[in-house]
Structure formats: structure tokens, C-alpha cells
Length: 356
Image (cartoon, rainbow, N blue to C red; front, side):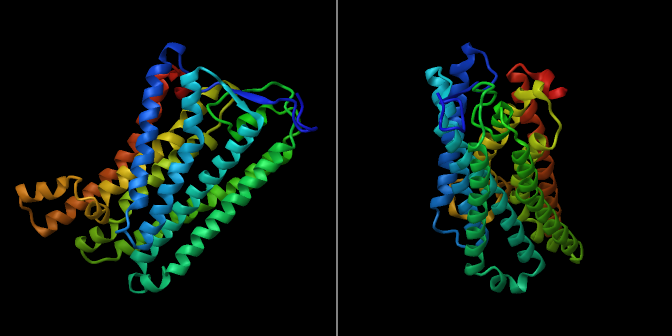
């Protein structure tokens, strides 16, 4: 069947995760639990009315983005696993790709806005309230929405003009743009150029802005005369850096590590990290690392306070301990990225792809 003169297919077949048919039930339960945890965890942050600072204004929008980002791919993947079907309509595939790009790009821009908020809070604390005004916060979110929608629409329009004569089997669990371009029988040079150009705007520039922000933060912190001052400055940054390392670690592994047609399974596994695992972990990272979130959710245990009560320590020792906890968080997230990646690879019996 032909849709106008643009495509020769009426549906695509999603191969899904590279798992054995007899393992479908186990992985269905696993990913269903991950998806429900993602929705409930981020919904708690989204609905909490006691968090009014600019950082948590952005965090609230990030929570909404994570729910939507995961909801674009997870329900369809779970439905296919449950019903043992692989088909998705042409219109459904294009729509899924469009919304996936919107939420992915919005994630990038919101993380960048949060990094700028941390920069202003630490490097210009006296002027923080004036600089991070409500108007600026709304403006940053609106600009993020506009840019994300425009970029997603551009990719979708360019994709819709292509023909698919080579087949309709997508080696992925969702309609990934790169996987669809491989199927196209049309010239995809323009698409590839747009992906490269827009990738600089969506991924490279936000990451550079985050790195520059934390570079200034690091320089400002090192000028502080006391360990207590350093600790106080670094404390709010731990959770944001953790989320950034998880998110960009997976994206860099997917888009900047060279791959070939024989590594489709590896691309699928890395995609699982930043479409399912990272949105699920974000609420836990922010809830466990931020004092305001702990105050808003007092039922969560404060292990650090219990330790200090049981083993009284001096103020200097407390500051040193906070710094060690901050550094250990960063090392933990780096190791978590690697552990999740290799664990998923070897669990799905494609360890040789991960090591190639």
C-alpha cells in the first residue's frame, strides 16, 4: 500500500528488545515495574506544591518531561510484549518519533536551565532572586518548548517525505529516527545533515553550557576560604550532576561512539538506559540528595542525620564528610552507568556486542 507518493508501507514491524520469546513474560514484568515507578515517582515531584524555588520549578517540568518521555515508548513496547505483536501503523510510527524528539530535546534544555540556575545561585548569590526571576524561569521553559517542538517538527517533515522500499522491519523497540533512515530507499543526505546540525544545538551546546556553568562553579568554590563554604556550595549540585551524568552518559554512548549495522542490539540497549532507566532514577536521585525534597517528603529516612546522632562529630568533620559524600555520588553514578549498560547487555546475551 502507498501513502501518496511518500511511502510504500502502511505499517512498520518493531523487532523490540533482543530477548528470547520464552523471556518475554519476565521482561514484561520488569519494564512494567520500571514504567510505573517512573510515572509515580515523577508525579510526586510534579504535584508537590511546597517546592517554589526556581530550581524546583525546572525540576517540576523535568518530572513532567520524564513521564511523557517514557510514555512515548514504554506503553507500545509493553503492549507488543504482552500481545506478541510487532506492528505499528505508519502514522503511529511517525507520531511516536515526533513526540520522542520533543521530550528528548526538552530534557536537554531543562537540564541546561537547571545548570544555569545553580551557576547563578553559587556564583552570584546576592543577585540570585533578581536574576532568576519568575519571568526568566517562564521564558527559559517557553523557549525550551518552542525549540523542542520546532526541531521535532523539522525532523518529522523531512522523514515524512521519504520512501520505504527496502522493507518495514525496524531494528528497535520504538520508531527511532536513525533506524528509520536506514530503511529508507530515498536519498537521506538532507536528513543526515539536519541531524548533524541540529545535534550540535540540541546535545553539544547544552552539554557545553552545563560544563561551562560547573567550571565557573568550581572556580568560585575553590576561592572560598573554608571547607564549610565549599561544602555548602557543592551540596545543591550533587543531584543535578548525577542526573546529567546518567542522561548524557547514555546519549554520548549512543550517538558519539562509532557503531555499524552489526551493533543494532547495542544501540537498543543504550536507548533503554536513557528512555527507561534514567527517567525512573531521577526522582530517587533528587529526593535522596536534596534537603528541600526531604522536607517535603518527611517519610523518607534521613540516614545521614541518624549517623550524626549516633556518632557525634565536629563541624569540620561534617564538612569533610559532606565533600566525600558528594564525590562518592559522582563516582557512583559513573559506575552505575557502566554497570547498567553491561548488566543489560549480558542479561540479554549480547555481551560480545558491548565489548566490541
